[in-house]
Image 1 (cartoon, rainbow, N blue to C red):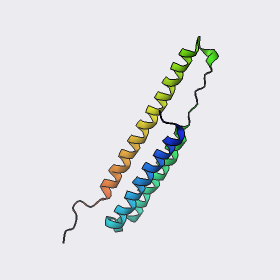
Image 2 (image 1 turned 120 degrees about the vertical axis):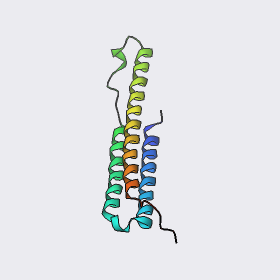
Image 3 (image 1 turned 135 degrees about the vertical axis):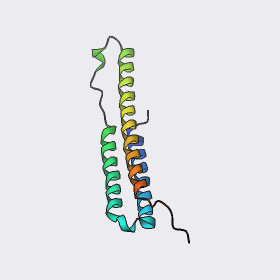
Length: 113
């Protein structure tokens, strides 16, 4: 598992890239749908905020709750692995929704001159 700082930076970079793609697509294709493109960018910002907030999870057990340190470490690793999987699933699902929304705003066929 990556540390929290690396996860937060990766989320911020991914969301920044998605927002940048929205801005490029908006300037190239979306002059008639500015409000919809702005809504997509706002959804990306909200995704970033929620995903970064979900990075911080705390294992609420202490070693004395377990018979030995090995079991504590195993339970702790399992907890953080599950939390990372949940975050990853959430982030991917939301990115897919945003990508579908972006694709719906793109023109069906490019004007070729």
